[in-house]
Each structure stands twice: as C-alpha cells, then as structure tokens.
Length: 590
Image (cartoon, rainbow, N blue to C red; front, side, top):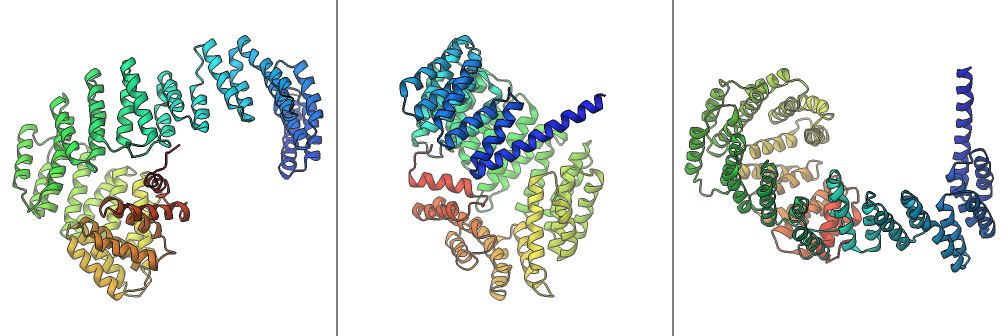
C-alpha cells in the first residue's frame, strides 16, 4: 500500500513538473495564452504555490490585461496574509498611473513588518523586482530598527552598489561583517570590484576614510585588517605593515599575517620586505619563524648582489647554521644554501656533498624527499641526467600520490625533455594533467603542448632540441647562452610552429637581462605574425606590462590592455587587463 501511494505521488509530481516546464517554455517563447492556461491549471492543483500565482500576474501584464491582473490580485490580497500580493497590486495600479492607490497598497505591505519584521526580506525583494529600490532600502532599515538581531546589510550593500552610492555600499558591507566575521573574504571579493591599485581613486579614498573613522570610534581589529588589505591592493606595503603591526601589538598571538605580508611584498618592494622580515626576527618567539625570516632575507640579498660579491652572504649562511644548527628546523635554510652553492657560486659538487650530509640527520620522509628533489636539480644542472632521474624516481616510489611525488614526476618529464627523450617526457606529462596541484597540472600541460605541437615538425626534431637546450641553459642560469641558442633556432626555423614559442621564451630571457627593447621587438613580432596563435594574448599583455612598468609608455600600455578587453575576453589576463585599462583611462570604478 505504501509503495502504491509513493508511486501515485511520484507520478503527480512528475506530471506537475513536466507541465511547469512546458508552461515556462511557452512563456519564454512569448506564447502567453498557452502559458496562462497551463499555469492556471497548476495553480488550481497547488494553491499554496506562490510562484504560479506570480507567473499568472506576470502573464496578464504581458498580455496588457491589467484589469484582470487587478481583479486576480485583489482577491489574493483579501484572502491571503502575504504582503507580496499587496506590493504586486500596488505596482499594478502604478502601471495604470493610479499612484495614490499604488501607495495605499505599498503602505499595507509596509505595515506588515511592524507586525512581523521577518517579512522584510520578501517585501524588499518584491520592491527590488520592480526597481523600487528606495522602498526596499526603507524596508531593510526599518526591519533592523525594530529587530536589531536582523542583519540585512549585505542586501543593502548590493542595492547601494546598483545605485552608485559607493560610500553607503562600503558602510553596509562593513556593518555586515562586523556581525558576520566568517564572510570577511567574501566581502573583500565584493569590494575589490570597486577599488583599484590607484590610491587616488575616488572609491579607494572613500573606503580608507570610512575605515579610519571606524578605527577612531571603535577598537575593532577587523577595521585594521581591512585597511591593511586595502593598502595591499594599492601595493602600498609599508602602510599595510603599519596596520599589521598595530594588529600584532594588540593581539600578539601569531606573526603569520606579517609573514604573509613579507612574502607578498618580496616581489614588489624589497626594501619594505626586508624591513618586515627584520621585524619578524625581532619579535618572533618561535624558532621556525625566525629561521624562515632569515632564509627569505638571504634570498632577497642574493637577488640584489652585483659584481659577484657573495662572500658576505656565504658568511651569513655559516653564522645562521652556527646559531640554529643543522637539523629538522633548518631544512629549508639548508636547501637554500645548496641552491646558492650550485646555481650562484657554481659549486655543484660542494652543494651535493652538503646535501648528502643533510640526509644523515633524523628527518621526516617529506624532508628527505625535499633534499632529494634538490639533489636531482643540481645533478640536472651538471647535466648528469641519469643520476638525477634516480633521485626523482625514489621520491615517486616512497611518497606515492603526494604533491611532492607529482613534482618529482614533473622533474622526470623535464629531465627527459632536456635529454631529448621527448616520448618518455610526454608519457609522464599525460599522467600529470590530472595532478591534484593545479600549478603542476598547468606546467605539465604547457610542456606537453610544446612537445606534441613540435616533435613532428621534422624527423630529426632539430628545432625542439634547440629549444630544450635553451631551456636547460636558462635553468642553469646561463641566460646569455640560452638567448644565443634561441637566435640559432629563430634564424634556421622561420615559420615553423615553434617560432612564436621561441620568440616568447626569448623575450622572457631579455626581460631577465633588462634588455627591454629586445623583449619589445619579440612581442611585437609575435603580434604581427602570429595573430591566430595561442600565445597572442600572452604577448599583448606582456608587452603592455613592459610599456607600463619599464618603458614609461602608459598610453601604449592602455591600448594593449584595451585589445585584451575587447578582443580576448577568454584570456586568463582579461580581469587584470580590464582593471589596468580602466585605471589608465582614469575611470572611477563602480
């Protein structure tokens, strides 16, 4: 009996659903009479379904039968306590230009929130539906006034945004997260569409003023945190650091936020990054955090050294090992030192000896894997490919399916590619396309496409071998040699599918050497001769960045960002290009 009842109910539901689908289909096609007939049947069988009633009202309006809509709505208002019907009846009178009766019905709906403030959401949404935004704002605010436990600030923020009242929108978002801290990241994403990198942008100034007033009036670290975030968006890391110090001084539980700021600023402003890292060393009570800060400081110093004056840095490494020892806590520092020895001082054998000694320490499996990964890199640097492959394979076997194992597989593929064994490299890369690490998966896909697109160009694979050789030289920090190899490729393989990739890669190397005019030439050549290729948006965007950041030609940069916006909407650079184009054009973002 129960099964029979279930089957009957299921059949009724399925029939109703199919009828509703058909009714909506008629409506979308503009066949309103057919849609009305079906919705009337559905409403008759489902008296409590408000959506069918609203659809019937909408169809009457589409058919310009406002009197029928009025009669239908008057009946609903008389027999229902739902204030949405009063709003719909009011709007119906407004369509007939009977504004006094429209207001009369709107007032009836508004009175309902005094009886029950929880009606506010449905009432306000009904007003929003008909673009009666001021009335929606009134309802949300009135409901919160009657019942302070209600929080409609997120809805108010959205409406103020639509109206272009950015200051009120910001205030509403901030009022919302004051009571709902878990929505902080969501709120930042919403606000980010209205601000820019320009600290003189009108919206940026408005948000800063609001936050500063809140900081003065109420001691809530949330406002310092958002102000710090705003300064990061403006790339003003020094001001962000001031806010982070204020947060830490009042709540000295962890330095992690300041560590994160140091990492963000390292690529943009090394002076501020150094200041932050030195502060971390001064304030940290955690040994690992101190060591991490020292490690990043040394990396910054290595980047800035000129004329091969590395003796001071080597002394700093030695001093740190004296203070903190060679143990599990200093593994990252040991890896950095090995990298320094091999790739900067060109002392790979010393680096290998040092790392093999590190392996004798009591380490976790993942720390052992990290050291073997670095050993493999150094052996690739020496072009001892088979020995490197042994280490990478050991990692894959010992930590199957881990991220570091997938990284080792990528290095197996890359090493095979350097050797010219493109088939084996491609086999490994196919597996990595489904890597749990998006970064590894993307790198694997890029390398696989490079190989598969070019390995059949000629039977000897000469061009691809030249490219992989240049790639290896770049890995070995032999940038000038890599550029020369790419010159040979470009001179001897014009028009082949690998040409644009070689041009783009060479441009990256020119940028590293600060040979900006040469990089400009390569990007322009790709744009002129490879307009239908996959790298076209990369070339346009990178040339825009070159003009903006290095060649002081903002007008040219703006034109190129505009090309991305209007001609390459599917580009991964689209959002950034649009933001920078609008900033250079002087738009007020909203």
